[in-house]
Length: 331
Image 1 (tube, rainbow, N blue to C red):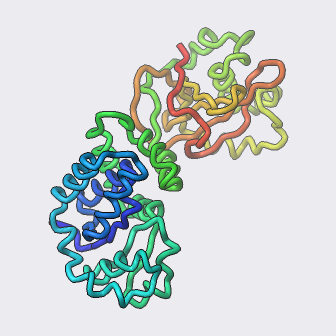
Image 2 (spheres, rainbow, N blue to C red; image 1 turned 30 degrees about the vertical axis):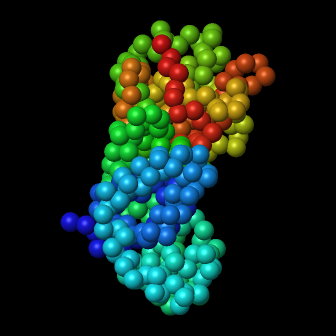
């Protein structure tokens, strides 16, 4: 059954393909009912050609698919043209506000928010949100439904983006806060196998460990857990250790296990990241052999000093925006 929550989609949010696909998939999953008008669709058509370089036939095809999926989106705003003159927002966008009033929509999603001042919209009970704000609201209200919609979009795609994280990254320009929120909530790590802690001396050579970031991270994590016994070790493995609250850091990583994948910085080759996921204190290291998704994780940043040693630089929740999504796996 279609949602009773009607939302007018302005042309500007239906032009970027990834954004449009996600919005309409959310609508198809009945999170809201989309509303548009012939004027709005004409504007979409013009800009698909002008801004995205589509041919007229390609633009026709895209709009035909939208109208086939939502045949009543135009019907909801029937009679809007008679209301245009009564609207007081920006002249070129009065038809959009008129569509909201005619359809009974309480919300317009537009990235031209300045063209819809509150004084013009509030008397009609219409709220204005950017696409970024709208998607963040949907993520807050029903994250599972949003992730399901993103998954559906990527599964249909015949070319990138083909994963949820890639779609979040592709949406960064038009919905940066939403993209960052998805990245923080839905990150991937490799499928894991337990590495028995008794094997750590065999897997990590103390003579060379600090020159390999995965090994350095393992030694740092082990030293953190035994910091009372080895205060000099944790100090030697931590950048500016005097600035750390080691007890608080240890508490934040309690119950988490270190994964062996190393994620490189997007710009700097002297910074890398390793991930901790919810695991077991009995098995502090997990070795990777495939991919799956997690939402509960911590990230350790390491920085290489002038001698080539990798030192712990900080622990954060959520995924750093400057970290590579794909990890290189330590054998």
